[in-house]
Length: 79
Image (spheres, rainbow, N blue to C red):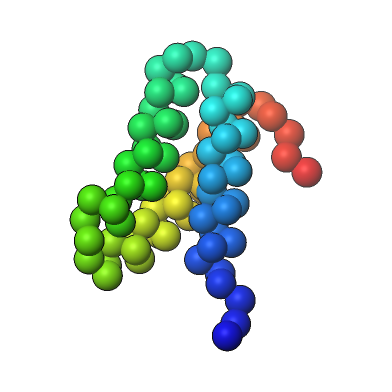
């Protein structure tokens, strides 16, 4: 069966998104983080295509990387 690596990426991206939402100081930053997460979450629901699941998984990974960069940019230490 194997290890579901895409689910690990989704989980890490989601957790980093929550952390970035908490760290965000401005309402615009929080709204942007929320809107991107909602778009990525609902992409497979709205666009029913096998490729949408792949794009959504890649989107969560990219979202997680972006949130990691945002958190580091805000000066929060990640150990």
